[in-house]
Image (tube, rainbow, N blue to C red; front, side, top):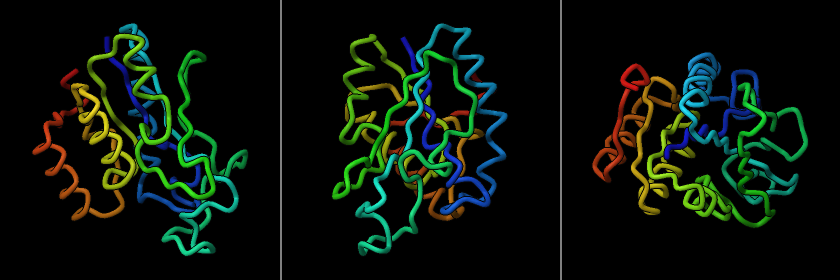
Amino acid sequence: MEALIIVDMQRDFMPGGALPVPEGDKIIPKIEDLVKRFKKRGSLIVATRDWHPPNHVSFKERGGPWPKHCVQNTKGAEIVVELPEDAIIISKADEPDKEAYSGFEGTDLAKILKERGVKKVYLCGVATEYCVRATALDALKEGFEVYLLQDAIKGINAEDEEKALKELKEKGANIIDSTEL
């Protein structure tokens, strides 16, 4: 069994949002195509999202590095890709004093995947050098075979994105193009 994990495709991470990933919106059609393809294959579709309380530790007001973003139940926290009704939504960093970049951190994602017999995970989304990287590393630690879909991810800056991809490859992630599926 396999799963497509869509990382943090939320309004605040798109151009015009509170914490935009440059050209993050350009991968929306690619991800929506992947959702259709994986759905047809009978795969599990998972979407992670930042789901911050208004007083989250990562916000500048609390000494964190980021502007306020992806606050629970706001427009900025909305997922911008069309998902099937049976998609699993994983909310992370939803406690005021705990940060979480990975979709596995402080969530039931590993348990959900293992209960459904998932062995391979395919990752797409934003931002490559932050939440995509952390989710991929944790997926590897959890024993999943990890495939990073390089044409369906976007990073904040090319140099850091390249470092993240190199690290992930060294740790055992497979970096592929969605056309190879």
